[in-house]
Image 1 (tube, rainbow, N blue to C red):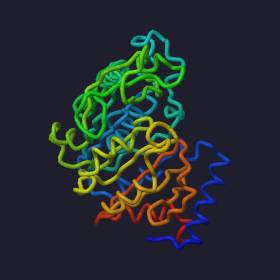
Image 2: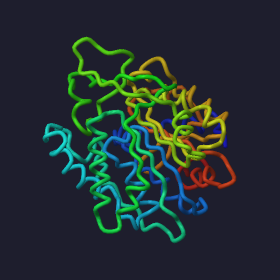
Image 3: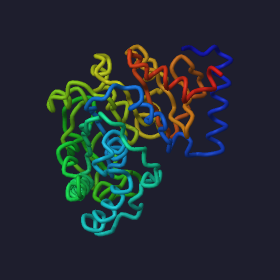
Length: 331
């Protein structure tokens, strides 16, 4: 699919009008497209890599979509996070347990259709305090009736992600100097080198390519990246995997922070993954705004947003998304 210039311009105007009315339009999207996955894909044990796992809400949504019988969802994670924050961080985290976008209030998906085995979910989190909280969240679910399989399927890694395997440095942004010490804080981000007087956290780093090799992962159905403005760096370490056809759905954050501030370009990323066979959209609530072959310069707006890209393959997912979640383009 390709927009003509007039249609691309109209779509962009429609997006900015929706964003003007609701700042959360693409900052905190509904990701309604996920409901298509069990309808379009053939039942199999899926794999999700959740980079920037934080409190675990994306992992929970994936489990509740594809393994609802395990009893893990955003509500149960919220309960566990509330308990963990008091125990691990002494109640110091002031941002609340629900997440900046109110993730704990997300709609719980309908029961998983018959025939779907439980997925493998790799939760990658650089902050040691948040990692410890995630371990407690997993333990809380394992102790619930029927939740034992969560312990086998939810793999939690205390690891940073970049373009290669190397040591990484994380610090709190702005005045939030303790962000990397407080469990669940979402403003703990990567820095190029330690800052004088900062409470720097030193973390082992990997690339997506190395992570797959080290964990014997053959294919990734959903690759989610949330790196607080360093998503372009993580993508650099993922392009070889994307080019190989091993990934079906890619999610990442676009921002005005860190590398997105001036060095990286959303247009360049979209063009690169298009060459690897992906259609990209700004995720919305619930409508998607197509970026691939519908680009206009105004879409390089450098503000907190979420991008989702679908592999063009025989499953028909990319076509199903276009038909259901971007109707403006073809109606």
